[in-house]
Length: 281
Image 1 (cartoon, helix red, strand yellow):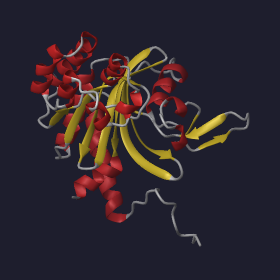
Image 2 (cartoon, one colour):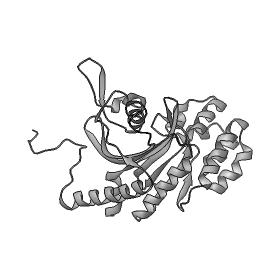
Image 3 (cartoon, one colour):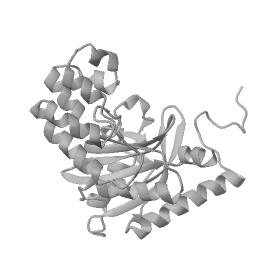
């Protein structure tokens, strides 16, 4: 039996002190983003384009509109923000730096709050990583900043003629079975020094993307960095260097480079609920 006062599993409830902590965190991050030239936008909860952002479409909450077109509850904000700014609001504003505070939704009833930003028509990923680092320092935490390059696992899949799913799933045992010296060394990369040491030992097809990863990692002013060239994330639109912020088993932030409708941009999303757990600890 479900009582009227119960809330669905996966949904969020903040009240009293917890609601205040959430508001204080959001305001603190908003001040940093506004001081960095970002303006606020709130996008619709419903979207026609979420399947283009989420790799596993089973996570989308979908239904049909009055024209029988498929609509989804917002499961990611990035592509909608860029398209709304460049296409729907193109004549009303030429501003290119936007932030948002809003929830995302996934099947069956999961709700997560985000504080995110998109820097449209900008392509220096180290700028957005340093902005993330500034926010982490401002809220007085120092979790791991993991930096990767989505093109590296794709190229490895091509070079070794293996399924990209092995890399997506992080199946280290299958990779070790290949008994490939340069691949085994690449698996051990974790910092700038070990990345520098491996670049000359890998096939030529990988060198350019590893050098890009190295260059951008060196530009980040943050002490707790891990380099993970083999990591393959779950969002579909990242197309270059990207990153996540993690603490123990919690992902606190994801961000990276992407392109939509021919426009190159950068962005990140801070996961408010997970940040609050860390701050309470």
